[in-house]
Image (cartoon, rainbow, N blue to C red; front, side, top):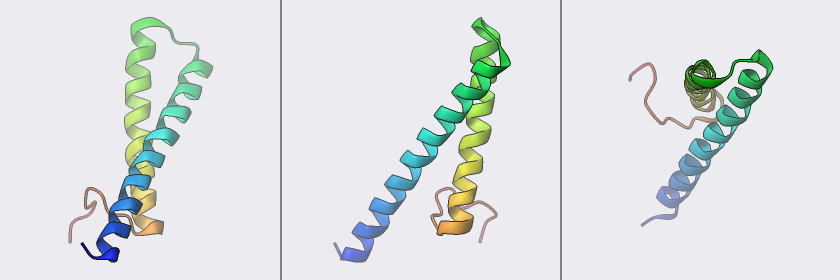
Length: 74
């Protein structure tokens, strides 16, 4: 394994972990502030989490060059 491949793998892993952590924190805050509880809170949390996660992944691709799902095609 060459060092460049290892570096790319580490950056990819850290990018995904940071996207998940950011999405989880922000969606939890948004759902808490919205006042929803029970099933409605669960669905709202899922939708907000998914939207934020893919938004953060897009930002990582756009500004850090970390391409996880190949948004926009090549």
